[in-house]
Amino acid sequence: MAVCSGLASSCTKAPETEMYMIAREQNSLMECYIIKTKAGKLIVIDGGIAGQGYESSSYIQAALRAVAGKKEYEPLEIEAWFLSHAHNDHFNELGKLLRGLFKEDNVTINNFYFDFPPFGTDEFPYATSDEYDLKKLKSGFDRYAQINGIEVPEGTSYYDMLNGAKVNAQTIAAGQDIIIDELRFEMMQTWDITDKNDTNSTSLVFRMHVGDKSVLFLHDLSSNGSRRLLEKYGSDLKSDYVHMAHHGQGGGSEALYKAIDAKVHLWTTPIWVWNNTEKYRIAEGRMWANGGVDFTEADENNYVACLYKAYPSDPLSIDAWKKVLPGMRVSLGN
Image (cartoon, rainbow, N blue to C red):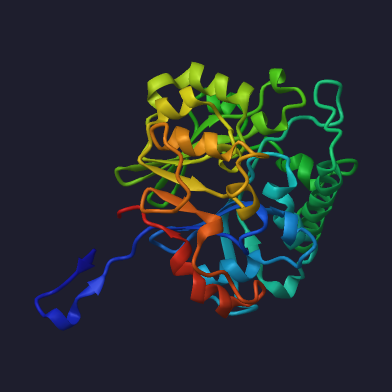
């Protein structure tokens, strides 16, 4: 969209909301969205990484600086960071970033939004390998507090102060919206006691509204969470875009996707899942998104992270990210 005065030479393009479905390369199991508002505010959804990129150095500061147009060590401000649930392919990258931060990095995160269950209790034993990474995430939060002079009461942690503080079952029940410039994030569902050891179903579900478009983020929602969401909202789940649950491999349910009835589907899927229909339920997810017919190629209605034409040659390089970002941008039609 262009805004022009009387002379064609003074025609300038009006700023747009930008959303990028980030992929470090095609083999990592991960979910990461970076959103930039028209005014330039940055929002991150998850950013975690497992698989091939698990042991690698943190990529996300370079990606964020590329989106923001910032050079290394220039002040970088993130308005909001959403974490969906406590699996390392969704939160691990934030932990890496926070643990490696120095004051000189000039990174500020204004708001953290997440609501993880009380792991370590009888209801939520959390006896998985992700527990190790969750401890590292907690240490990262404490480092961030220390660097920024945030006072944390003795005997607690910055993680404890943040977890569920701004978004939780009570705020969601009250119809919570989080407004960031032209964006409205409609908080819809968080964990429930019936989820127990189904960590995927504890995913924080929300819908982003931008102009007349809506993007529903299901994250890794599985059977129990899918049932709760469908029972609560029914046909009100109708959205223009949907993030396919559990990287598209059978997350959610067919009934849930029918209610959402999205035109555009977002697949944060690694290539080894996309191509293996025998081991994973990816064909089932593709059929739910495509009227019962399987498909294997990306198109304007299916953004697939493992089928991008290019990935950063050096994930730690701002310039390398700048070159590939156009191919990771999700068109919101604004």
